[in-house]
Image (cartoon, rainbow, N blue to C red):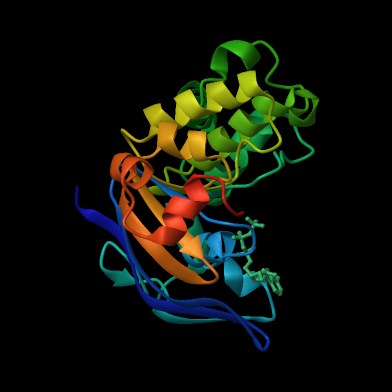
Length: 252
Ligand SMILES: Nc1ncnc2c1ncn2[C@@H]1O[C@H](COP(=O)(O)OP(=O)(O)OP(=O)(O)O)[C@@H](O)[C@H]1O
């Protein structure tokens, strides 16, 4: 698979504290890359580098190179709003807007001018909800508030919202941690389907989830990239002792 995003020697400081010590990692196109590692090792910080979400944290200073299709995402000519449409994000806690199901999904396409008229907009909403595996459950109540859905449905709504602006990459920060096992299984199946069209990077605390959904796994430890490799190998025969210890449950 070609490389979709490339990071070279990425360092992040929060004030005096260094959270990432120089991460060089390639994210392959149309694959799921899982970021694993003990709490506080820098997984979310790294994820936020990929669409410049760390810009929104005053104390955060990012250095190093971050490339999307070979282009520097810190290029001054690059529009960060555009970048975040290309590299979308789904958060830990489902966070639908306090608006209707329809408006939650149509908001992004509207502000990015992706639809020429109402019918086109409705088409984008339908396609996005279908891709997120939510259409059948909500098609008769698109005017109802998104916040009235179950947790698992809300998370799929947030995934539909991310998909609606036709992203190339979707970043997911522990997207199932607030969901029950059944909703988790639904979202995991969805992630597996989404990789046909999108490049996905997911932070997860669940080794089982990483093993189930990802093709590549990157193991972080104290701000370093301990090891990266094919998920199958990482979970059966890791090279790094820190990975072995972590997946055996010895720390974290
Ligand atoms: N906004 C912030 N301000 C200051 N320090 C921060 C901030 N966000 C994260 N950190 C620090 O940076 C380090 C890495 O945090 P990060 O959240 O990236 O780790 P993580 O691996 O995602 O952790 P977890 O698995 O617990 O979510 C931690 O020491 C954390 O305390």
